[in-house]
Image (cartoon, rainbow, N blue to C red):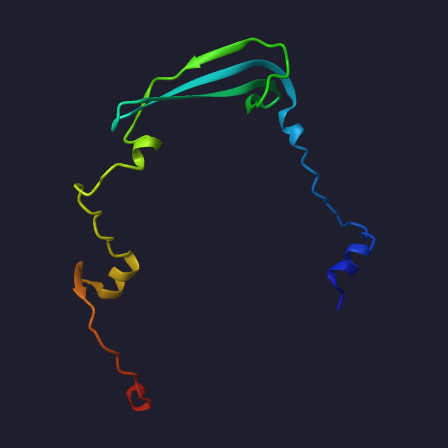
Length: 148
């Protein structure tokens, strides 16, 4: 029997096509011309305590052969224009500060999990367009006399 390592050492015969996967270079995914930096300003308003929380996301816009790519950056590398986007405030039910102290005991418990379709099929069967409960118990096994 030929092992996989032995097959790897065999030269390809005529008509065989060996395709090796090309290594993916992370920088090759971003081939193109950097155009600008984009700073997205996000604001969150806590419904519980009413405080404002803000954070920014900085990305580099690159025009490439496959279209526009936005890549997150940790520092500015090129002399490019900076475009600032102010996103609409997002309302959140609780922020990190008040989530540690919030009391949800006044809310109802979650609904009970519904039966899965497999469990329903195990209990019910369709007969004449109506759902009929399946008989519980084992079906009798036919004997040789029942077959004749």
